[in-house]
Length: 129
Image (tube, rainbow, N blue to C red):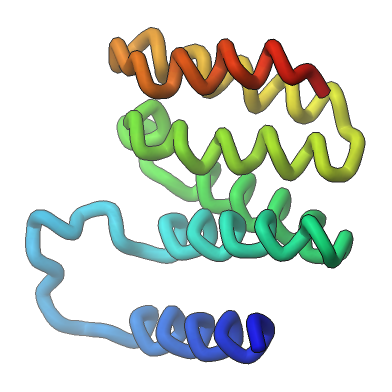
């Protein structure tokens, strides 16, 4: 099932951590922080039916974003993970956490002139928390 697939994917991440070769320049973002955010996104989806997974989603995404180099934290693709964080906070009823993450998404949307993220923020505000 899904838990088994998450375990397999986690095994791949662990194998990646042991990689000592040269990382191609186009994969500059792949590292522990990126994989934490990836796991967090998966846990957020699992959290719709397993509340404990939502707690893991919040932990993984928060840790992942914090683990990125400063200049990467405002990249548009990070906004996608922060959107997942907004949803995770909403799943556990943490309005303040959701609002804080939403502010971060809005800031990235503005900085990157991302209409996609700006639309997501507007839609998220309409849906409320």
